[in-house]
Image (cartoon, rainbow, N blue to C red; front, side, top):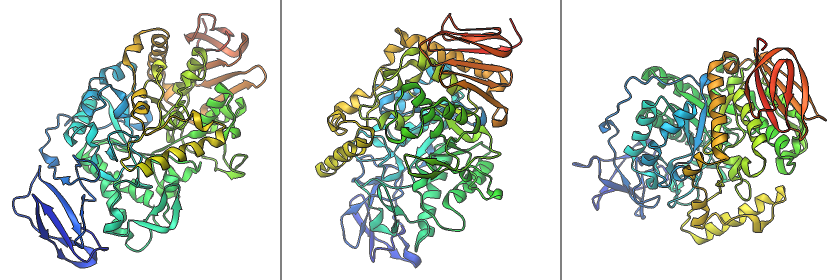
Length: 573
């Protein structure tokens, strides 16, 4: 145990306290005869109360209870032939384990995997599953980063889910949070200098990645990443809010992490990914290490989301004030970033940098994700904001854009359920602080405090659970079929999986509200307006997909009904 903040450390096993010998650099150790998998244990620092192991593999009694030993080698995997999958060919499906099924468990999620295969996605992205307070939450306030959340099931339950995904040909990406820990059950600071007050983040003191004691702190997070990839056979990691990971070392933590994962992938003989969330619009995240970048595989592209969302909805509050034109959407499709050293009214400064020379495969494109839905006052999905015609346009652009597409659970059938923010803090003061903080946060969007559901009541969690039975009922079945057909189309046309941004051409008319995307031999024509429009394609096309019967590609003519989209291929009638 590394506990440089303590003078004396004891480990408690089966109710017996075992003093640990003090070694160099804050390390303590002891051999406890007979201790093994299934045993509960905890640590006491300087005679204080029991604390969970910072590297606890399982917290069956929650964040304040004892840890439990796990033998990762005991699980019987059946995915020995699985070698991973290339990110460039991926279609990701983000899900929250607790609301994905009525049961909200790893085991229950396995039952829904055939539906994802039938849809045509290739990878499952799990929102954070590391142990967090209470029984329900998004997972971004996790505190035991090595332990799967006990309400979702035991560690073997997560392994069975990953094993089943691989059996269905689905890769697994796990969302991990290395920029902060939650406040409830966070005991790391008692053990050592895990945090540093020289920097601050929206969640408090920053993780100590470059100050005194930082080598062991860095190892804590690097080893954690390796553990999920090695012991749970996860194929990739999605790093939450890397703009809040502050490190002024010559070798940035993210670069070291990318290098560690690359070496591990070679040793395991599997393709591994690291994808980042960042609001910096900084291409160095995904630029090669030998070119001065961090070498991550891809990053989320909020500019594409914001440009698409504002054109569809007309919303212009909060950070949406920087978007809203077809010109912005066209730029996102052709260049990934809209703000590429451009002045941002919302930030009141110049923002971003052009991702010159980078492939579109370095960016994830989406209409919806947990943030863009759950961080609305009422957790409305796009289906609650726009009609079916505009949803089909959005799906067509997401699934034919030059980026790695990501869908959020239920998006494919325009799920009627919201995805609210929900928590389960035991401390009533903390629960109230979260409640009030959410209300203040939404002021920039013009939402009234009374419109914000209480995240702490069980109803907020229950209302967010998917209703799988509605998939076969109108209008949901029609949207589901549209997504299936788009994904089939994507698989059948190499132009749609080509990541070259310089091979993308976009034409648009701001006043008439139409946009035409060309990628190789495929043309995607969208009419956002409430009036029909006819366009000249400039080349002979035949219809591959049309969202309504009144939309078609016929020779060089594109006929578009109001709020419709047609996908055509070069070659004529």
